[in-house]
Image 1: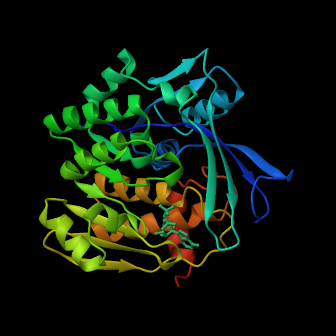
Image 2: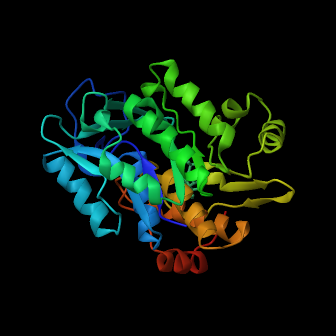
Length: 315
Ligand code: ADP
């Protein structure tokens, strides 16, 4: 029907290399790495051979070139990435706490990523897209939010589908617009890809079974719940639940796992795979991603996923 598209922030990520208490003192950093949840997602779609494009913005700087070169090289259609002379490429600094939690310092609103709007290139892309993937992080950018709502409506009107990864980071939730638009997309999406608490927030229920039941009754076609090193589960309307144990890997950097997971699941489904096979490939994509430092460094081709699935034991 047309490519999978997404809208949202392209960033460079710079990360603390040691687990610690914060950025309050000089320390060693790694990066810059290509990043931004929508960018990681769309790169993974393209690496698997899916037609993929992103509506985004970068600065006319090295951070922008690093990202656009990578996306283009991996097969993403970059025609709707605006290059801004007056705004720098967005950034995310991340550090890890001893309990595994992450804290981010984002520069998005006052970067090229904060300037996303409906350019003529974006409009052309929306008109031929077959699927829109919505990232919660992108709904926190007012301009991107408008493009997303327009894309969802346009693509659905021509028979296309929509997926939603809540991914609502606390650091980015500064106004009500993000939650309002989130609820709008949630009401019409075909596939929801929550992790942890996001399922409860989306459903307004604090129990997994009740949350899933409520969302499926409200019309969601499929819910795929990400459980980190516990693997993932599939819930579909009128279909039996499927659980998939995680692959056994050494986790080096968890950032980006959920984005790769979602992209692999969606791409497999769009290629016609059944939910159980798509879930297995998605688990493999998430697991492979955590073995590499840098959020986009562990994206996989379909062939790499196939080999990994055969060779790697599961928990
Ligand atoms: P998110 O990044 O959205 O919070 P998760 O952390 O749940 O999502 O990771 C997404 C998926 O990646 C998991 O459902 C799992 O399949 C895989 N994954 C994540 N962490 C690990 C890990 N340590 N070992 C194996 N697989 C993992």
